[in-house]
Length: 427
Image (cartoon, rainbow, N blue to C red):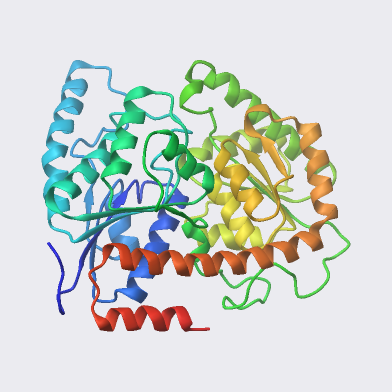
């Protein structure tokens, strides 16, 4: 299984990739960029949720994560239940066979060690456990790179997550809370490091005439006195794994509060651009457009994190729920207010110097949100400078992340070491 001499390393990427979640695909894109730069001879393929999308968009071979195509649909009939059960057994063999063909498997970012959104243990936690157990069995090095974790109440889900983490060769996290959560689950995290989210390694699209190679965060000229557009990132939010009993109540409160906030912006004459981060968020966009019914409110169907960055860079201010909507806005240096649904959002905002500008997605109070929004805009110029500084720091930290990953899981020759060193030293 070890790649030696000039043998190209066989690298697999694993996860719910190509399934409609832009954040997951952005993490994949960041890792593929790292592999192209530091390991250009690597032979890469994927075991993922949306193989057709991954194969066409990223031009790598891709295999479906689950044998049973209805894995994430609720099974109520006997036939569907039997097929889903059979699929769990078939996936043991399929996953092991796929893992065995690789030297390294990378799980790129994503909240793979958390249950902050509704999740069943026999879904992705089971798939991740099969991956990590197969890696240990066949000597394939499994790396959980920049992943998210959180305390988990459900015993079965917690056990699968704990054993997956223990069996992995390498672990790093996107925030300190994630590492602490794994430690509390009984995982030895002594050697694990915390880095910024992998999406901060993506190139910044050209916007407002600023080249991609330059840090974005401070406008070239003073902002206009006329208030500009506001991006509002929405989410089909129903609470977390422990909120199933009151999921609809949480959703109604979130939708009502967000709609009232958008209406208040429109009454002030502000153009509003609605953003999503997952295909399932479209229903929330439709509901807000129907309720507000104003030409000042428009929506976009972003196809990538690069698209989201362009949208948020064109805005004066961003208010967003999904984690990677926040990442995109912060990366391009736009003052941002988080409708926070999990500790990861609070941690991200704090890391980027905007800790005070968080508002609970479970308890959206439109009046208080509007007050926070106005306070944020009053500090816009100062916060843009802060974000520019924090983005430069994030870029340096992620360079270190990729260097550490190479040392941990790749059997590198002198040429690869020299290439990685040259990459780090490049301006």
